[in-house]
Amino acid sequence: MIANIRNSIQRIPPDLRRTIGRILALAFVVGISLYIFSIRDQAEQLAVYGYPGIFLFALLTSATVILPAPGLIVVFSMGAVLNPLWVGVFAGLGAAVGELSGYLAGYSGRAVIENTRTYDRIRSWMHRHQRASSWLIFLLAFLPLPLFDLAGIAAGTLKMPVLRFLGWVAAGKVFKMLVVAYLGTASIHIFGL
Image (cartoon, rainbow, N blue to C red; front, top):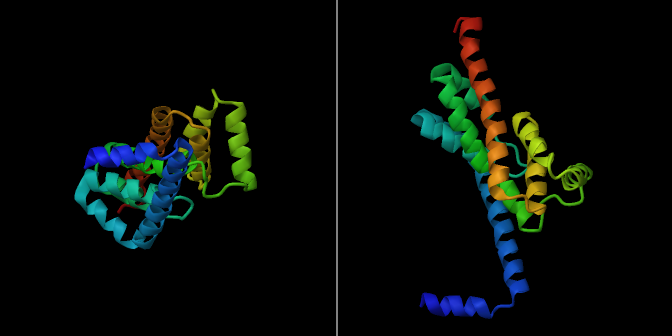
């Protein structure tokens, strides 16, 4: 049966297969973004499961494309309760994996937000400065700005190697989450909580 399915798929022209794959990837990204946005209030409950819960929470809140999901507040809070080093690492790695959704949206060839001025600027800069684009990915992953989704989509559109993308995103996200988690720890001492 699997051989029959494989043969049927191989009979589909390569361009049509690629188009079908892109449509499915885009549908997956839009679907997961809408789902995560709809459960954003319940997602915070994952943090009670310790570091794996923080990883999952960060993954879910970062997997949305453009739609806002709360993430840093929980990392800040958990940094005050658990070891901030591990909170930052687990949250950063989870967030990096979650950002693959934007990359996948761009890789599908149909960016969710094509032809916006900011996206066009980021994509153009990344295209012109391919060696430095990794640093832009790192910087935008570190900064708490919604621009990262645009950079992830641009990286996918430009077919940046996925492991390179993931490595730079992980570095930026872990660094950002460490800062937020340690600020959570410091808040206990500053405010005497």
